[in-house]
Image (cartoon, rainbow, N blue to C red; front, side):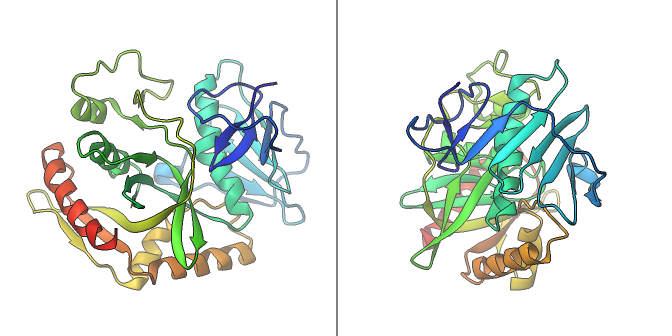
Length: 311
């Protein structure tokens, strides 16, 4: 049995070791237990949500008279989240890389399990800034990880999260607890931000490069100073930072959260209330720019200047 690791600051027991996660305490009861047992699902699900586009690789299924949720990926990888959201069973083809399973569990399945309990989990990249943090959200490929990596590597901000960030409230202040502090980049972004490091040997089974020297920090809540929604801007147009309407902020953030059951009205209503509370703090901004590595320095200056008002 491997020692627990920490995800969102909570201990989780895996059937294999995951070196990129901070170690947990052997004396603490695990919040989640992952078992390599094929999901024992007999009846056909009553509902299935299989989105198109960037999220097409994942489908959620469930039953109207049961509280467990099945998450399926192409190639026969399946996860079953138990009704109490504490046990996760999985099955995968023998050739499935362990790092693929590890990242899928920590970056997708655990956030979904938390969402099933009514928690609000943003799909975001997060960096620190003194006593507060900055979060970047946006569609897949928008540049969330790249922007956070640049601010960490070049501007010296602490890197906190690359995928999931749990929203919690402490004394009426929104805080984020990172899933974990590991960082992976596509090779082109990696070479741009880490030009002196050879990416060969750092690629995992997804062909992303794991950034050395990042990770193993113990996830802990930190005040949320600013949320930047990354949006594409016209080519050749100068980057801008805009204050969105509450409606636009709500709609965009609603597309940047993990959710596990789109048919549970109670969960969806709670998510809506949590998002409404978050956007009415006035910390949401839209960061609009045409994707260009040459603009990163200028954009980082803008982000730092704007965030300083909140931090």
